[in-house]
Amino acid sequence: MSNERVLICGVDEAGRGPLAGAVYAAAVILDPQHPIPGLADSKTLSEKKRDMLAIEIKQHALAWTIASCSAEEIDEINILQASLLAMKRAIDQLTIMPTQVLVDGLHCPGIAIPAQGIVKGDSKVQEIAAASILAKTARDHEMVEMHARYPQYDFAKHKGYPTAHHLRLLAEHGACEIHRRSYAPVKKVLGLV
Image 1 (cartoon, one colour):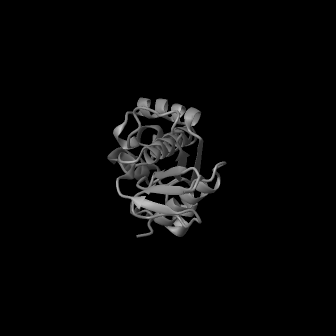
Image 2 (cartoon, helix red, strand yellow):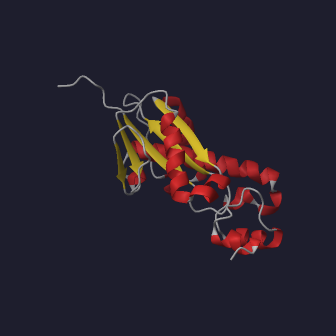
Image 3 (cartoon, helix red, strand yellow):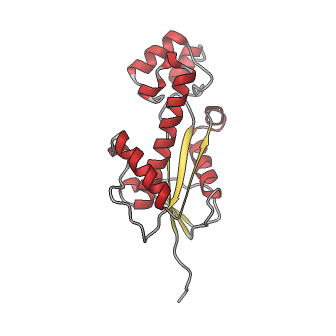
């Protein structure tokens, strides 16, 4: 019997659907000695609850990291590959190497550690739920910062997602440098389709 401690790392991304901004990924190794009540898929939590849980995760996890791929990288390699690259970057930055990586969804990044994709993993696995919260809160905070830089797009409100409001502003102002040029609504505004 091995004495090796099993260290599970949960990984998830945030921001595949938006028309603007980076895609974020987080990797989290939770501490079994410090359970965090309330962990759930970030999409099911209020912004306030996500922000509170993000603080707890950062305080109590054995290790956590957040990484991203820019809009330019998304346009260059596509959103799936950019999501996987952001995940790989997050895993590579961990200060503790896990023995297993559990990823939300079907696809796993190319890493040397055994990895498994779990569909709806953010609602089934605490480590993935924690990663989903960190990725989502980091991305949302970036979009609030982008709002200050590009107030005409109201990024703080829609976080870059293709809402009717965002599409109206995109049509009115054109694309800015953080818009994803490979996405159809942005291509349309740029006259590329």
